Image (cartoon, rainbow, N blue to C red; front, side):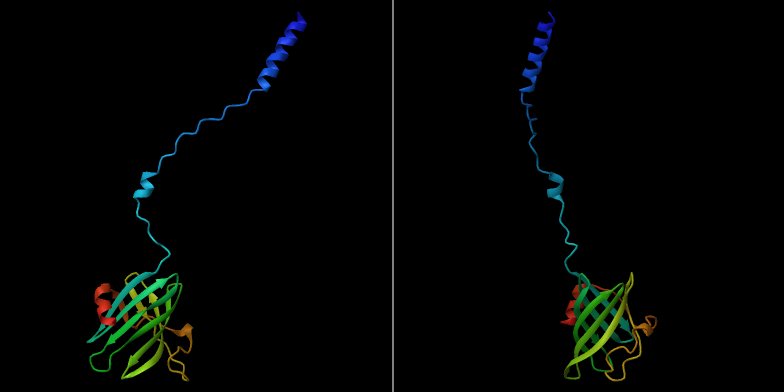
Length: 167
C-alpha cells in the first residue's frame, strides 16, 4: 500500500513538473489622451524680451533673444538733441547680468562698438555705469567697479513697438 501511495505521489509530481506555465494575457494599451491634448512648450529655444527707457526727451529701445545664455538683439537710441544711433547687440548672460557688445552706426559712421552691461530685474533692465578703458574708450576698465544704480532703467515693453523702433 505504501508503494502505491508513493507511486501516485511521484506520478502527480512528474505530471506537474512537465506543465508549462501559461503566459499572462496582456491587456491592450490605449493611447494617453491627456498627453496628446497638452501643448508642448519649448523651454530650450530662444526667449525674446523687449525693453524701453525714457530719459527726458530721449528714448532707448532694446530687443533681445536669449538662447541658453547667448544673447543677440537690437538696440536704438532716439535722442532729441544729439545724433541717434541703432545697431546690434551680442554677448552672453552671466547670472543676472547681460554682458553685451553694441555694434552701431552713428553720425554716418558704421562699425562703432561699445560694451554695455545690464542687470536683469523683475521690471526690466538696469544699465551699468563704469569707467571706460583709456586705450579703447569702449570697454569697461574694471568690471568689478560697474555700478547699476544711476544708470538708465529700461522697463519691459511691447515687442511690436520696439521692433518698429529698432528696424
